[in-house]
Image 1: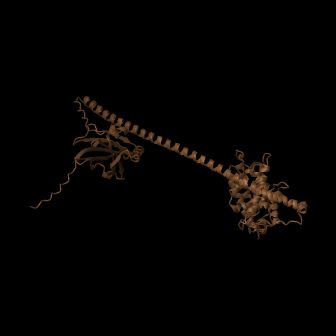
Image 2: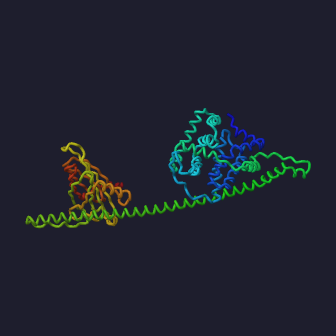
Image 3: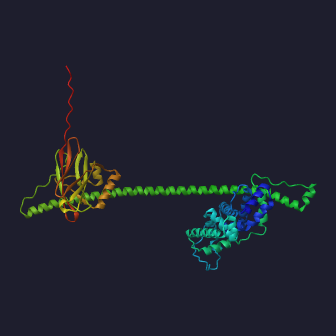
Length: 513
């Protein structure tokens, strides 16, 4: 079906037909004015300015509106844009949001639906896709029956009805997101009420005159003929009216220019506000980053304190074990066992050992031997039992050896694990503590992993791991694991110095006589 609205608009754009444009203004005066009135919160004078500017834009863009455009939807969208820009320029928009309502169409506490949700209606309509907005404008705001809607959209009556229902459902979801629970029936009533608005009696004529004074872009207005004499020209009532129109035509560009300046000023203000908002967001992110950095430092301090306490616990266990041995010797009337001689393990030979029962998933933290001048190492041993046959259970021993300077180890709280005598001080860690420790040590980069050996043996059979710590000596681990109850492991560990093999010197070339 031919789009009559676009036909009239093309007639005006190409031929300058004022009659055609006046017909369009008469058709859509109520829709544009009522939409503008809702957008500016019921301010009549401002609504008149907005609605007039909508028709001025229509006249200017008459030759550029694409074919297939539903003029009612185009006017509704343009009304929203111009109203928003005008309110921003006025800087008097109410600083409040309507409260949410739950409506089912049965009653409204003495208020009309339009009073409750009129402002929200157009905001929600703005978010609809263009084809959904067009069908609702045709059906409700332009008050056309389904047959007429279907004819304009080239649909059957049934398909037009389905399009209306789908558009209403999308509108209902948009209202729901804004905090308003409404039914499709209520939306239909609300839209119908929005389509009953009436513009002031003289508005259509004034809007037409203002729009015709501007005219479509690229199309000259029709020339005005003159009478035989100047007196007769000015005295004719029709010519007096024409002079009024010409005066409006001269003033309209100035009014339009002022509006453009106001829009640009409002847009600039919006950019200033957006810049301020971005600056505030950046300051928030900077503050959050500082807090995160403080939290990281706090976490490191906490870990260092935790390791210091574990070192103290290992030292206390060693002292308790020594006291137990002294008490047993005294009870049996035996001479007290010799006190272990504290050593710094800087010599060529040392040997130390430990025995510990390690629950499933747990680890043993020990070490403290020297690996070079001013450098020491600690070791984390994690044994685990595999297999279902107790007679042939396999035991995996996962070992991580960390190295750092003595100053760093002391600062982090590892000095409690420095070797003292022949006993390896140790502390048993749960699975969670082990994960937290390895993650913190390796992520923070405080310590260097110098070796990560893994060996598999069977219960009761020993396993050995060796690695070089310098050019002259290396370290050897001797593991003896045994299965305990509930898949725990009784672990014996001996650490000792071993000589590293020296490379054979290369033969020197012999000079010929």
